[in-house]
Amino acid sequence: MLRRMVQLFIILTGGTLGFIFLPDLLELLNVGEIPFWLATSYAGAIIGALILFLSTFWLVDDIVGIIRLVEETLVKAPVTDLLFGSMGLGAGLIIAYLISLPLEAVSIHVISTILPLFITLLLGYLGFQVGFKKRDELINLFPIANRSGLKDKKKDDAQKEYGGSLKILDTSVIIDGRIADICQTGFLEGTLMIPEFVLEELQHIADSSDVLKRNRGRRGLDILNKIQKELPVNVVIYEGDFEEIQEVDSKLVKLAKVLDGLVVTNDFNLNKVCDLQGVAVLNINDLANAVKPVVLPGEEMAVQVIKDGKEQNQGIAYLDDGTMIVVEEGRNYIGKQIEVIVTSVLQTSAGRMIFAKPKLLEKAL
Image (tube, rainbow, N blue to C red; front, side, top):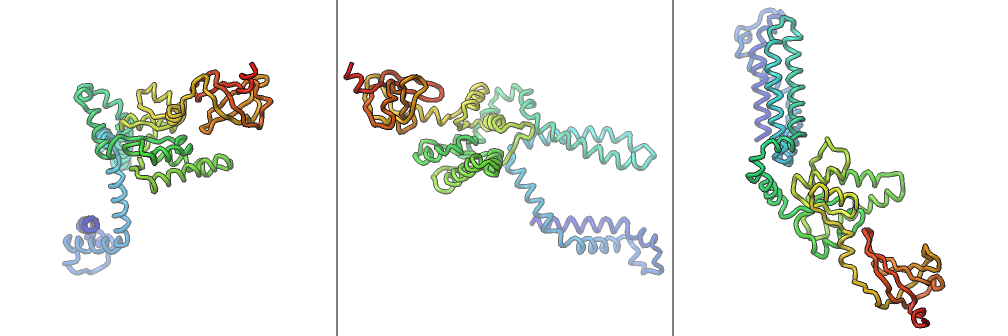
């Protein structure tokens, strides 16, 4: 259907050009005696339609492809972006029309024809960009609409479109990899959203000349591939972008506000920014700390001291989950498996730290 519409448009355009210009062109070329029927405007319309149709026949598929690409882009774009962009475009075209009216009266051909066309294109583009990039500020100009539930409607529309609550993944949590294990256990419900700008950052890291960064980026891409193909979770790619914002973290916060989603991260700084901006956040590190086994002072455990501590005669050991254990008077036991007694537990923003002392030393006392 679209292909036939494009062909019809080409035929009508060629017919119109032939109807208007072909008789004058034949007269200007002074080709000599020509049949009367060929010099008429209607014959010119038929000839012009045939010439343009045959000369552009090979371009029809490309034109249809471009139209479909534009259609897909517009369908995937949020409704608010299209609405305020169109409003800005309309305002720009109206202003351009008003400016062009006095220019049409100028006798200079360039000013009366080309300049109005340039002004129309320029102001139309600027109007669309202003309406698109200032949509949030424009929404705030209508407090009645906000109070009447516009934000709730946006939230409901997003949840209907993506099938439940949105969990927006940032770069750090993808590279970390634990998100795949959490999804496999079924503790995350709803839809996992991966913004395209996060994918671009991952690809940039994977293409880095630094070996460590390159391995981290490739690990992140492998984790995404596993989540999308092997795990029973709904994964969508958000293809929009916020061109006026440079930082990826700021784009994530903006996207979470627009779609009323939750940011999933293990970045401490991004966590704080989300809290300040009023955006819900799920921190993988907080989850890991919450599910660690509870250790109380006086409990006994077997650990292996592996290195010196910062203070004199201290030894350092680790639990299977990575929790650090500071063993007082444990330097002499480096490389050995010993029984220790927990003396205190310190909870910090980076995790837990357990202080203990050797059980043998406790018995000696």
